[in-house]
Structure formats: structure tokens, C-alpha cells
Amino acid sequence: MVTVSLCMIVKNEADVLACCLESVSGLVDEIVIVDTGSTDRTREIAGQFTSRVYDFTWTDDFAAARNYAFSLAEKDYCMWLDADDVLLEADQAAFETLKETLDPDVNVVMAKYNTGFDENGSVTFSYFRERLIKNHAGMRWEGAVHEAVTPVGRVVYGQFAVAHRKLRPSDPDRNLRIYEGQLARGVELEPRQQFYYGRELYYHRRYEEAIQVFHDFLDEGRGWMENNIDACCHCAYCYEQMDQPELALQSLLRSFSYDRPRAEVCCELGRWFFQREQFSLAVYWYSLALTCTRDDSRGGFISPDCYGYLPCIQLCVCYSRLGDLERAEQMNELAAAFKPDSAPVLHNRNFFQILKVEK
Image 1 (cartoon, rainbow, N blue to C red):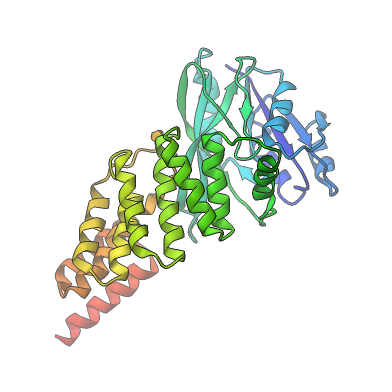
Image 2 (cartoon, rainbow, N blue to C red):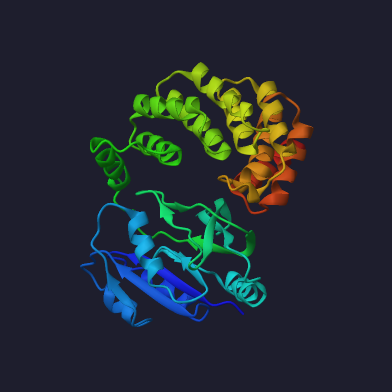
């Protein structure tokens, strides 16, 4: 059985750290906590789970802090978590199985990162991240923000997932501040960092600047395919906010130049036409979304609802607006197969039942 060092960087995480560590303390063989300047009870809580608590002077560089934490690991693999991450019960069992069966020749284990949830706890947003990295194999974190490890050697996909359970917002300006500090010092952002810098500008409603960054990123042609597709979508979001819908449409369509259609993009195109009451065209795009194959292993951002529930419930509305109530009801029942307790599904059922009674 392989051994695992959990390596975490933390700062002022007293409200979530215990929950995180309780979910994994019986699964890992070592816990290394690197504190970057806490002023609350974070260090005290960490000390309840491990004696290996260290200080690291924060330098606005997440990769530097994570590399330091990894450098302290003594086991076969290094695993990272944020303080507001947890392994749920089913994932704990899958993690144990992974440890028992993992081939020591594997360099990197990718695991699903579930970061969005609906009111019932179902996952609404997820993607794969490098979660276990073989110790002393020459791989390092890169990127001051949105840091990542470039996998080298054999990579496998684990069956466990990590749930991101954020209880409070983090500093909303931190990432943008770090990027702009780098640019002020003359640092040239590599493609991945350029992509995330554009997203930060979008979050801060600096839409014109975001579009310019995304266009530069795409035109340089050095980005990862999944980031290219997402950049097209974010350009569209920016253009919508700037009341330039035709350019938003062009941006969404540009995503098809990088790979086959994603259900997420098809749903955005369906929404574009739906908002303009072009329901037949909306039907086309929502229907296309239902034909898209979900492939989490490609590593991009996944919105599970786009591969079933969302296009079905929207097709119900579209067919209703087109006067085809029979097909509308059929699509509502298809949506119910994905989310039987969905409020829109129940509302629509009641609507169709009233219509039948009135007839």
C-alpha cells in the first residue's frame, strides 16, 4: 500500500479546518500544515491533528507556499487540500481503495473537484485536478495564483472526489491584486495565468479589459483547448454585459473552432436565442446539448445539468411557447428523470394537469 502526506497551506481557517482534517485524518499517513500568517485559532486546531505545523512568510505566491509544504513531505505521495475541502463518506471509502490498489509507478492521481452544489446537495459544477503527486518525482507547483502542477509520467484518474464546501467568501480582490502586482513588476503571464487573469477582470466587471486579455490569449494560440473554449464563453459574457449581443454570439460560435460542441456552450446558445424569443433556434441548440457526450476526463469545467436536466426543462418551455404542448410535457418528464423534485418540474406538471382538466 502506498503512503500519503497531506500537505496544506492555511491562513485564518479556524471555522473550517477541523471539518477538513476530520474527513481525512484517518486516511493519510502524515499531515503537514503550513501556516502563512494566521491570527485566529488555525494553528491551535491544526495542532490537534498533527505536530507538523510550520510557518511560511506569505509572498503573494501560492505556488511557492505549496512547494514549501510539499518539500516537508516524507511519504510516497503528496496530497493537497484547501481548508474548506472535505472528503465525503463515499469518497473516503474510494480513497482507501485507491491507496490499497495504486501502482507505485503512477506519478499523478487526478480526482474530481466538486465545487458547486444545488439546494439538494447535487453537484452542479466540477472538474478534475491533480490531487496526489508522487514525492520527489521532479514535479513542482507553478503560478502565483490558480497554481497547478504539470503532470509528468503516468497519470491515472481516481474514483474519489473532493468537495469544496466554502462557508464564507475569500478576499475578492486578492487574485486580481496579485496579477496586477506581477504585471507592474514586468512579469509576463504564461498562457494559463493569462486566461485566469481575464477571468478575474470579468469577475470585477472590467469587461473591456477582460475581452482584450481573452482575445490576446486566444490569438497567441498557446492555450489549452479547454481554457480556449472557456475563454470564448467568458468573452460572450462580457459582450452581453456591454449590450453587444451579436459579438456574444460570435464568441460562443468561435468555441467550435477548438473542438466539438460542449453541452455547456450549446445551452448558452440556446439561452441566447430563447431570450430573443427565437424558440425554434433555441430548440435546435438545447436539443444538440442533449446529444453531447459528457467527458469529465478531458479536464475542463463541467456543469452536469447541461447534460440532461437544463436542456430538457428549457425545451419544455420552448415547445410550450411554440404551441406544442404534448412535446413540452414529454420534455418536462425527461427533466424529471434527472431531477424529480425540481420546483420547475413540479410547477410544469401542475400546469399540464390543469390544462387537461380544463379540456
